[in-house]
Image (cartoon, rainbow, N blue to C red):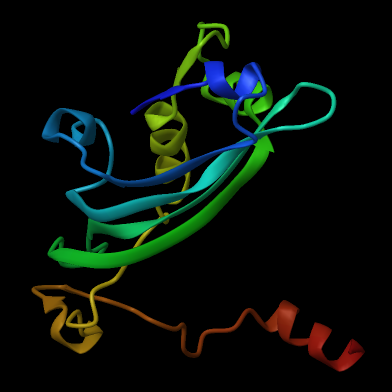
Length: 158
């Protein structure tokens, strides 16, 4: 998603509007925890301030599909985030070796921020802990009984 910055740099335009629906390939998803990603929409603008710095403001939202931490079934997780910073700073965070010239590809910036939005774990609403028992094991949600007697004495201090 290349954006031409020449009109902004030459003060022909004050604002470059961004309104894109993004698609990602299976190759991009390969080394992530994502099973799929859909309905990604980026809206925002690029502006130039009085110090000739280019500012990026983006709202990105969509739906990512992740494996359930218990059953490994596909779980839908909606995400939404905002990017609001100088373009120069954002490019440093993405580790882009290119200098800002006349065009900029903001797709790597968006992709990096989507990867930061992946939760540590998701659990499907269909995953019921009482169903998770086997031969000699069971899923434990809370600890019962067997409190260390030495630690029990600490309760009296509080």
